[in-house]
Length: 253
Image 1 (cartoon, one colour):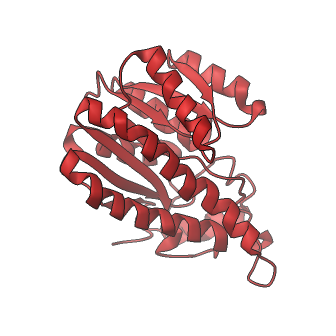
Image 2: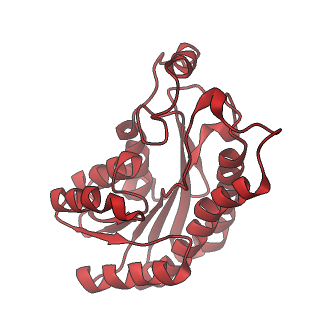
């Protein structure tokens, strides 16, 4: 399923799931753009960009002006429009199991923080991507969600609420942009083994989830990336407004 001649932006892609997605798209012939936020991530982003023969661009997806500069820099470098957008960037968050904030301790500020990156970030990147998609005559938006919306096996309140909002945004975006040959879908992951966000997940949580999952294991970032490639490519051209859950069968829809 070749993606030759396509250009993809993956937000938050200097490591972890984002980098796995960038590598999977690149393996199918797609040119990719590595995006990162923290200055401390610059070495990893540069290394990733070098390995994928591309560029790494620092930008905060919550800042519209920085997102516009990101798209401008990509256009200047590649001299062609971005045709695939993967909204993967995650605000600071740790899947720390019993150490999470509960309803007794969580605040609206915690919700705002997650909504800012997840929902506002996706809005900013989508708006900047539209001229690129229209120039190309097509576009693919893939938003990264979570199976916790359907099955909050661990009730991470703020993170799950933000991803639930992103699922609604996926549906409305698909409905609005479909007539322009622009699709918008979501790939929802379960607990992944292992990313920075899940590094503090206790082993017993991994074991608990694996034991009730039909495949009897926790999936990897590389496995989730396969579903992103499907939605990005020709085989997924008639799919829009859809959510695929990649979690080994824990959630069945």
